[in-house]
Image (cartoon, rainbow over all chains, first blue to last red; front, top):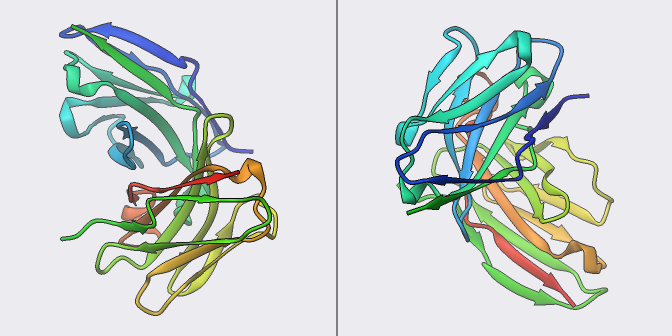
Length: 115
Length: 116
């Protein structure tokens, strides 16, 4: 069965420091992968997605993610974190290889940013 | 362009009651999905509708149901409410059913249901 694991429940970084949020997936074929962000009291917003092609994908707000098939990973990175990046981040994989819009989400990583 | 609109934003019900939540997708979007978000279970897929047809259903009891209208607006209903149904219910719309837009969901702010 498809699944997504985000091993870090909570991460704290200093403003201006780099950030990497980990995501591992389980899926037999080439997955459709996503990162979403949720600010308090808000819905989720798509940061970036990977379908195929270049394994390094760029997203909004200065985020990028790298797909590594050999490690079944899709880690999210940002070179310099801003206080406004404090939020919860969810990694997701499309069920059924993208045949529908059903997404399987990880449990999320809550990011805190220290001044 | 207006975003995804969910109503009501907050509601309180008692056990045994039923509730109906509404979702208006972004204009032109034909796919509407519903997710339940709780601290313990995280984000769980409820169902997806595309062109008024339920295309997928998650692993929830039959008390959870939904429908989509010809204008793509969607409703979900939960009957015989239980304490465990307290959650944030998120609706998301997508411009297409599959292809390049797969998984590119636009979420509403959610309906927060509290069951007492």
